[in-house]
Image (tube, rainbow, N blue to C red; front, side, top):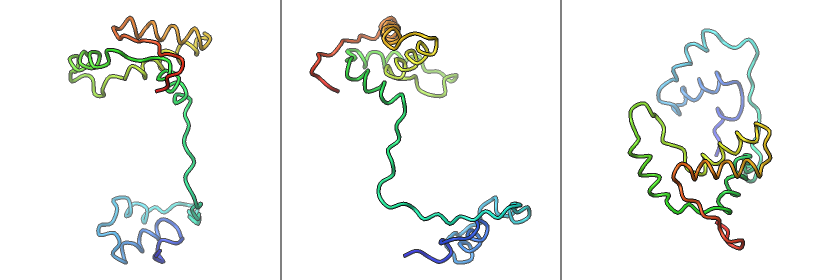
Length: 144
């Protein structure tokens, strides 16, 4: 059951109402600033959510990732991961990209330089193999 303060109105009024009704125990840090300097235009939020499932997000890299997974099998992924783990230090804040991520990065880079997708795929696979990862092409009927 929806409560009245959440149905409509501007953000400031809804927030103040939630605090007054005890929905929020502490007031947000930004509330004092917005009360002192309110927006020049009234920000009214009156959208009703659509029923059903949210649409699936599709990124161009997703198709490339599926294509890579269907075409190639990584035979020494554990070895490659252990080598990357040994290279960790304080200067690297995030983990090393996966083999598939490196493939996509190289493929997109090659295509951005004007190469065909096929040539970019060959360059990406060559670069990955040169880094010590063993890739084997899958048989035609097998899907990952």
